[in-house]
Image 1: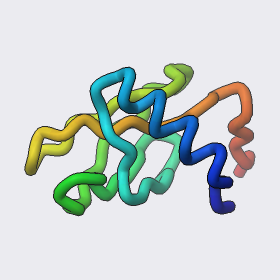
Image 2: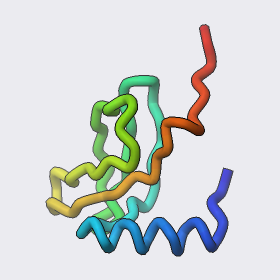
Image 3: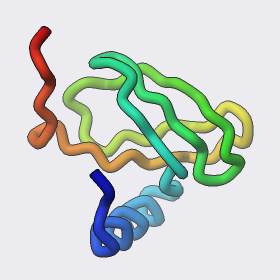
Length: 81
């Protein structure tokens, strides 16, 4: 699902207030990990998710940029296996 222009604008404003940037891409790998493409240097890295923490910021190991992830755990529904 692609974000709307309004969503992107709102997330960019939040990221700026948190001294961060939006990642170029992010993907949930599992219930425990997230893969990110840094919005600055475009390198990929993986971090463990902090379940229940809304709007985390992850630091890129290559360029040290802070990447803001717009997550609202109240909206996420995990599939049961």
